[in-house]
Length: 349
Image 1 (cartoon, rainbow, N blue to C red):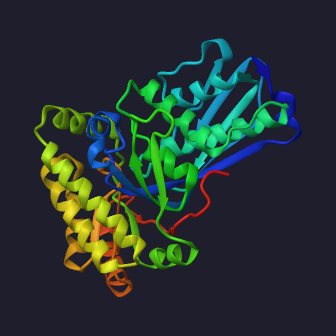
Image 2 (image 1 turned 45 degrees about the vertical axis):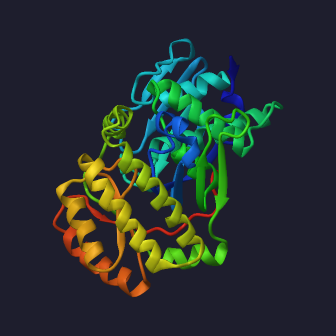
């Protein structure tokens, strides 16, 4: 165990990472993608300038304290009794991996709590980066991006009991707009990452992207578990396979800056999702997605849905019209709002 109180007293350490919206999510879970590597399971991620930060500050020797915006109470435990099943258990597990004590972790996010934008995974990536900075300051090894992704995914998958995807951590680590191919059967290269847009392309997509919070928080584990169960039984598998090809074409449309085609493909994915993941839609998100489609845009719930956030893409004039419609609808729902964001190119830092 390594005491870091004195080091952090000299200068607190902070790292941050971006949240994301996605198309094709759930194919990044091994239970789906590993048996079907022949069809090249894919996900498209768009990192947002809604960043989550993890700040490390000095605290009592032998203790670890964690607090986060959106949680009423901090958690404080001795280093030899860190709980991995508490609300902050995932973060305690990361600290245990590094073996540090005498620190307080302050987590802050620019996105709403439990908004389906990958918040907990993003916070974990930011925390691992901050802990890596401490490791370097102590003269030990730092963790490059690929190792942060590897560690973040396996920590979360292990602590959650399995069926955890990797796309949230991937977007947080690398930022930008990427198409991912999931290859868990390849032990040296479990994924292939393809950047879809350069700087100018990201600016153009940012003008045609709209993200909103539905006002209802979500918990992804229950929804994801049902989707995996239905896939494993074969009940929804044909729909998932069809959606995978649509997401592949969606990535190509984004790369080509073909916004009409991208919107059309997002509508196609959403049509399939209505059939195979109906529990992902609430009355509010169902209405907002219908308004997007009526406006000539494509829209989709973020992550596992069931509340949380949603996003839309389309031509600039159509997105501008949709923004006005969404603002009217969201004004009637407590805490719901348009999220002011663009594409974040940076990833964890």
